[in-house]
Length: 377
Image (cartoon, rainbow, N blue to C red; front, side):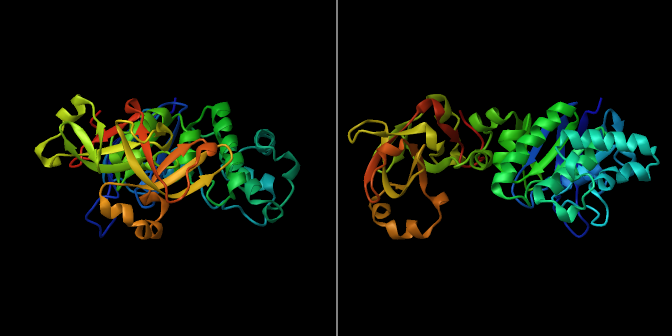
């Protein structure tokens, strides 16, 4: 059994006042593939390095399989790491690279050969065993680095952005391989990435971290359908969720001259600190084009359209007053993220410059408090 537990773990780097990881409580079940995701500098690699024993834990403790490893040496923790850079020995063959850790540990030669061949078969590397790393592609080198971790047969795999050096197509391919491989081996895995597509497609569960603080942990669908706060809502999903703050008038969100009905229980949770405003979020696929006089819809000035063959995307500015209807120039200067994104059939794309009406599926609306940024509905 190799359940991993972070019990109120904090890491403060010397010379820093604020913790890089703050009071982290996280439980990775035996055999689970947990993805730790967040923007650059949020503390995810620090978390991984504390588990590996490469960073000191200032407060709290870490357990692997029920054993407290907080002060244990990295070599005694029975873990294997795969890094972003493959860190292979250039003068050794693939087989020697994969078996090197076992050789150092004094494992018999025939046992090493057996494990290396088994790992090579799983990773499709059998024909490359006698080659040097320089004769391999980036994807093959990354698989050798994976093989080096597999032959150790550790209790826990730690992977630190192992795909970020690969090109887009290879990344998708290797992503599928790693997820399938982990299920086949059943080894508890902590996988760190800033790429939320990787997180959604690979993990049994996802943990989202921001500025060293854990925001939410759950299955990919749970984070996608019920984000706990504004940060998770905006971070998970591609294209990202549309999130805007609107005044609340008579229990409805006021959007320019239009209103959007809000569930009563969500409005009831607003406090004086929210100043009669509400944060409304919706995903591009949860909105549709509406008729010009339809109720419960709002106006959008189209700034850009994309026809991807299977999907069409409209990017536009929500018209909240006269000024924004005319501020086309400013919006074009900003990036797509500042614009509202709607997914439609590519055969129904309006023209740039049109004003269209947008209707949001009320069951798929995400409502948050402006003051706490926490979910209301």
